[in-house]
Amino acid sequence: MGTNAIGSCYRGAKLRLICILVVFGFAVTQSARADFIQTTKGQEIECEVVEDLGKALRLRTRIGVVDLPKDEIEKHTKKKSPWQEYRERRKRCEKTADAHYELAMWCDKLDLGPERADELDHALELDPDHAPTRKALGFEKDDQGNWVRPPSANAPDPADIAANRQQAQQEKLVRKIISQWFVKVRAIHDSRMSPKRGQVDRKKFMAARDNILKIRDPLAIPALTGVLSSGNRASRLVLIESLSQFPDDDATMNLVVMSILDPSKKVRRAAAEELARRDDPRVVERLRDALYSDEEGILRHSAAALGVLHAIDVVPNLIEQLSTEVPGIVRHSRAVYLGDIYGTFGGRARIVHGGYLVGYSPGTIGVLGPGSWVGTATYYEQTMVSVYRTEVQEALIAITGENFGFDRRKWIDWWDANKPRR
Image (cartoon, rainbow, N blue to C red):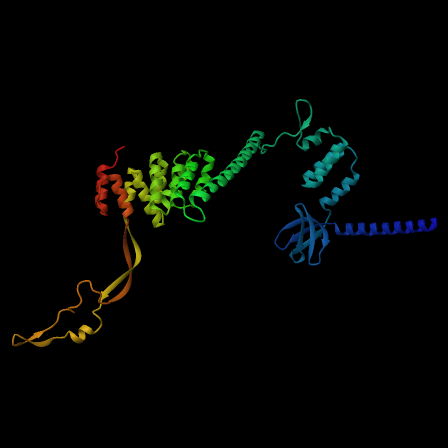
């Protein structure tokens, strides 16, 4: 291709580019109108119309770009917007730090945040040591005369940051150690104390028990409780032996729960006996709270544990829970003498006895002795049923050494006469 042809193509492309820019600039100028809009809801919006979307206008406001449906526009007034005035001032702005700082302060008054930031940046580019700009950006001079930003009042203390970082590292290490204990305890339990196949070998079980009782690391408590509590009764009794070696609250907490919720009465009592040895007043308070559980089993088991602890202070609470009235269905049965048999054959008859004719009525069916099944008619009735809690009674007996059965009045009289005087 010749030089003239190349030049001709270049001039044509340049001309098309200029036309495109002119048209684009015209469109931007037309779309970026300065407007004041009042909505049908009484809102007043100072904005620029960025784009006409057909049924809505895309507006640039101080809080950002929003789309406003046209049917919500009540009044639309064109005027010069702060952004348009800013662009005009920016064109006239001298290339000095002072000029850009002054324009930034003008933006600040009109709440033009992004524009204010741009002008302050321009001022620093022109003069990095411009004092008014530095102060506007929050800088202060230190003892060496360097511009520095002082820490924010809401900024976290570096010491707190370091402490939090150290705590996070410690928690990570703790989780790792606990995980390792889970692996070790599960291996001991599953292979010797509760094998998946075959019966438990007593010799292996006792060897595993010895290994469990050698563990003294408090970080092993989650693994001991998590693994052994899911095993058989013997495993759970070993768990109580193991927890008895730890004075930590973690161990006490698990013993309290076992004393109430374990399905085995023997395990519950063993846990309560260990709690009694700890002599921790918090245990009594938590078990006292459990006396008022909606779950009947929790109520009864907590009473039994309090009896083991000989918790004299809870006697009034136990008396309160000796018995209760609950709605229930009662079954009533009425004897039926084999339908109509007695009615058919058991009527009054005249018989000869000793040469005389006498009247006789059989009182019963003779072949049916006492307790014989004779048939019943059953019906059900909804009524209030008295529930007597033997576990609560036994706890009162264990604590007081007295036995007044379920006579609440006598228990109250005993308490009034014998309660501790403080």
